[in-house]
Image (cartoon, rainbow, N blue to C red; front, side, top):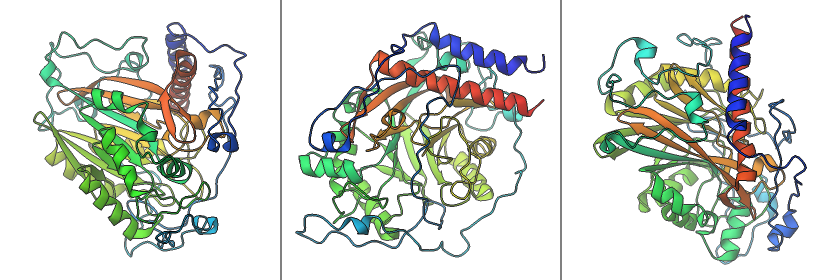
Length: 472
């Protein structure tokens, strides 16, 4: 009986969605579109695949990319700025875009965390865990109200993956505020090529922007490329940048905050980061990461956004706690975006020598430090969620705007819709997307979308089982 609880959690999560949604046909063909076909404007095939509930990692691509540069700062790796495309030239040699970054971090910025940070306790996932800060401390800090009998019920994993979201119709609508968060947005490489050659910098957003604008009070993205003048137009390489006109797409979609703490924002050095901030500022879009905290006020409620990168560098546990606690004093809701973990896996794990910090340990630390919600990215696969001390950690939304057309999983993603009632997160829904034409997401059909959500259920159940096993 010692193992009954994690098995029950996994079974309930799988049955919950399987009983309420349609599967893609088991023999649905997966017909990837070749790069040549797509760049020629041909064949945006509608690839589908049924993900099996019996194995979380079944058929998951394990393709790897070149390791990131060995350098660090709190926002992410920093590179000496590569040469930019000269004015009037059509394209820069691809060798430039493959140049590895070699600069070292500023003095005093590196940090090696303790092997077992104090204050982290590992608890088994609970389908009914209350989303209340009192579950963590037993006290109610300033700015956070206790659950009242007339308030919506606590957030649970069951409600997140239920066929229908919990209704908030009977509650005071003035207390409802919604955050929409996407997966990785990378307006570089083939995405940049498409926008420039089509002469349309709204192109990646055209099939999703209406929903994004209409749904959220705040729209959050992970912006994983600097926007710089003279960005080389290329379809290859691992040194990312985008044309500054890409900010037009962010405006079109109503993006409120762009998190820039990741392993590619620094590909053109501090100059590239500063230039990107200038373009965002001119578009009236906020940013977080690189020591910046973005604050948004929605009908009197203050949301603070922080961001950290753990890819190509170590997570600074002590500094993050100080940052989050400082934000806690000035905001009603604190949301932290984190770039973390191994790529191309459906369950969060470390990537030795590249991303050495355990995403689950980092996520727990951030919640224990005072954050209300943690939003992860970087794996380029959709991953599951965890309710830790009543607060949600979404480990990866997958790709949203990127050119990785070489596998089904890297074409998939979800957009998270996070609904707060006052300061409490009370409802969460994930809206699946599929990427076409190396750049453009669209809302997935039921046949394509259900396996994406099922993969999140599988990942969530796998984490619950691992957590339970670790406590035996």
